[in-house]
Structure formats: structure tokens, C-alpha cells
Image (cartoon, rainbow, N blue to C red; front, side, top):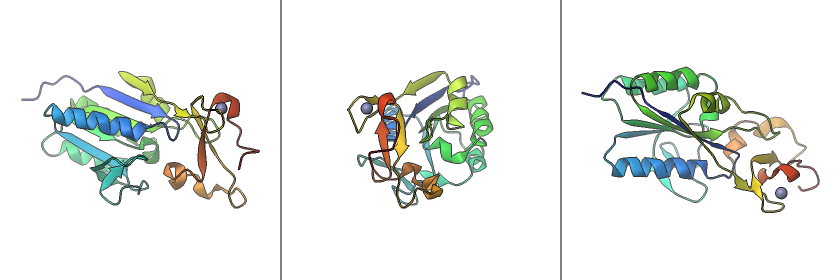
Length: 193
Ligand SMILES: [Zn+2]
């Protein structure tokens, strides 16, 4: 029988290009080495790895359930419970993922969440900040500023094709052509694209 202790919530947060997915998959790999059953979950908007895989900017991939709705994650409670659920790009699921994660935790599942905590204009990007508030562990990763090489806790969207909002959601996981990591001193996008 599974002990009825609640699961722990670990959040891996940061801007784009900080290696969040890489860190998440490192933890998945370690858990599997330890014999734990791990369910890896991504969002369908993240198509870097194809329809049933997660992949990172530097090429590591792992098979994953790619969902479009946070509620679909509750399916894992129906069968044999996994020991760990690892969720990538949590920001795509929106605020609805918070109560879903709380249910997984109450069921005793360890939950590892990676996601953007900051928007391209420097504001909090829910729901990751709310998850950080209740997590047992938060790892805040930085990227490398493309201007000066300092630690970058922001990313900016470079003006492309008139700067309308087409990239606002799906391209938050896009390539290097639309977004750049920036430090606090260089967080304004103007003058660089
Ligand atoms: Zn800089």
C-alpha cells in the first residue's frame, strides 16, 4: 500500500532559454533510475518534440503525454498511481492546473513542475508564480543575457513583422528568432532587433 503522506511540489521556474525542461528531464531520469514510476506530461502547444514527446533546446527527448487541458491530467488518478508526475510548460495550462496539481499532491504523488514564471514584458506569468508560493522546493533558473552575458531572469520578444501579438502564446516556446534572454539592465527589447 502507498503511504498516505501528501506529495511534495517542486517548481522549476525561470525565463525562456534557462534550461527548465532540461532540469525537469534530469529529475525524471534520476527518479526512474531509483525505480519510481514517472508520468511525464506536456502541453500540445509545445510541439518541439512531436505529438508524444518532450524535447529540450539542446536535444534531449523523452516520451510524454501531450495534453491540451489540465483536467485530462486527473486520468492518472484512475489507475495505478505514479510516484511522480512531471509537468513541462505549466504556463500553457493556465490557472486550471493549480487545483489539479493539488489533487495529485493529496493523492501522495510527487509533482515536479517546470514553466515560465515571467512574461516577455517582465510581469508574473500565472499560474507558475502561484505554484511557487505553495511549493516545498523552488528552483529559479536563469538564462544568459544575449547582450552582455550576465545572468538573465527575463526574456524579451523582438519586434517581428510589425510587432503584433501573434506570438503571445504558442511561440513562448519558439526558437531563438523571436525571443532573447536578457538581464535586468538589458530587459528593454528596443534597439536590438
Ligand atoms: Zn545584459
